[in-house]
Image 1 (cartoon, rainbow, N blue to C red):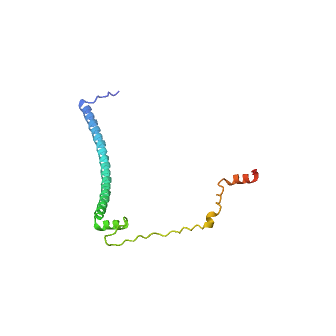
Image 2 (image 1 turned 135 degrees about the vertical axis):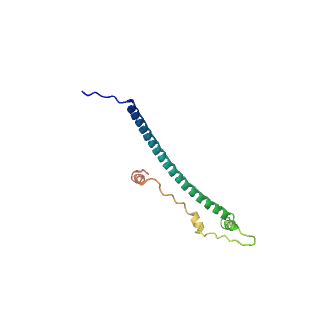
Image 3 (image 1 turned 60 degrees about the vertical axis):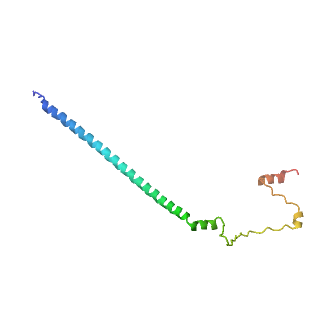
Length: 136
């Protein structure tokens, strides 16, 4: 039989140290990868926010241009003439009134004619029922 030799204390300590260093390396690698993924996500969010900022700045510039136009004399005069129907002193303004169909005058004979009765608004089956089975 062979005798199992026990490992020396130095070999045992070396194994423990190797396992500890290996474990720490794996732990640091996992933490590094987590931080790298978080950094990519943060960069993606930052890019999206930069896009939103660019869109908002573009809309803001368009609004500022519109405000500047609305403060000009040309805009004020256009609105006064087109929407408020105003004119400058000394000018003559005309209003075009659309002509619709004219009302037909009622003749005195038509006014004396008996009033027509309104058509029956009941469903057709009920009108037929009354036509055949009423006792009037």
